[in-house]
Amino acid sequence: MQAAKRALLERNANYILIWVPREAEGEVRRAGEGAPFTGLKPAGLDEGPVVPRAERAIETGDPREVVGFVLHAVEEDLQRRFRDVMAKKQYAVDDVEGGRAYVQASSTSSSTPATSTHR
Image (cartoon, rainbow, N blue to C red; front, side, top):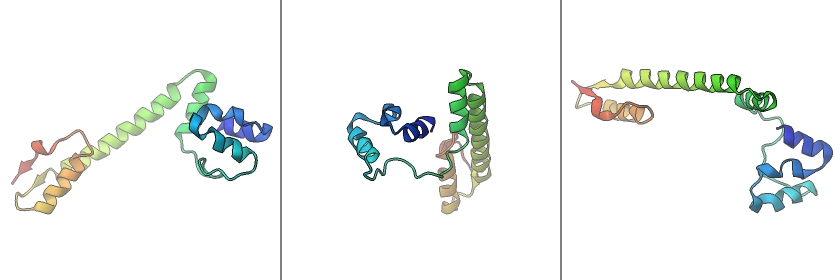
């Protein structure tokens, strides 16, 4: 985001061209000349919680904050997925929809359908 802001302020696309594939460079340069460019998000959209932390890590040379944030987010997500799988693990063999719900839940976690318990 800092590079994009600087490119706009200084009217110099070179600040952002390192982020653009070579084959799209012409489109970025045309955008700098006033032509519409649809490859970037419109101004005002939320960049999320990771981008500012990653930018701070790059500025300070210390990745601990962003690494800790990402690890915590991944752990919370895995715990939630695990609870969902465990809640759906016990289903009757004739409950096809219940079995499908279990398979769907287990396909997005580390559990597998082969470990299910049928009643």
